[in-house]
Image (cartoon, rainbow, N blue to C red; front, top):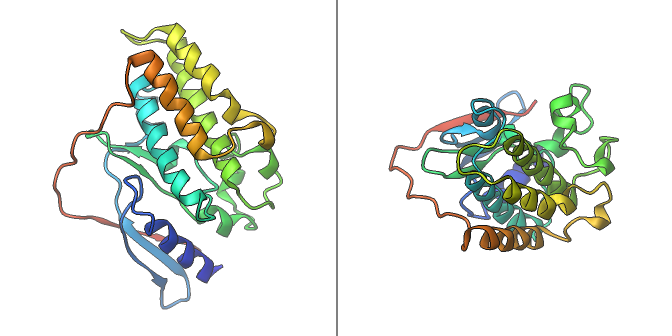
Length: 231
């Protein structure tokens, strides 16, 4: 388990896509526990941000976040990597609209632990049906399911309480477009992250006349680090 975690951390870091956080170190401490030291994500996770606005995010932010996460998944999946524990707490959005994903590689380590955090109700609803036994390894399709549920929840919240400028018909079209990702059967979902991303971009082009809004350049700041022990 220890060597596996270190190998996975380095493999995700090798992708060099915007949503990954810089890896500073991955090693074993003096007591034999593995640790990963990455740059801290800026901003707040999307669960915290959504709670401050009635459970939703602006449509443009939902699409931007999903596009960036799918870009990361696309690169990871072709290398045989699966996140395995995608949920709103693991997706961060900064004021500059930079997206970061945390928690890569943890799912495989904790699958057989008694205190598995994936057993909590707030995590289980993002777990694909084929992983409900919690003994099966995560797959690219289970990542697609998790992100689909995240997007569905955010869009449904926006439809219930639309902010100024939001058209409910647009939300309904987007919900219809991402529903294949949420299908209980893995065979009925988007075949891969690339197909899911393309479908979202096509919907965005129909609604807005262009692709997802580009992020502004991030502020220059000194790198900060976070040490995440895995016990």
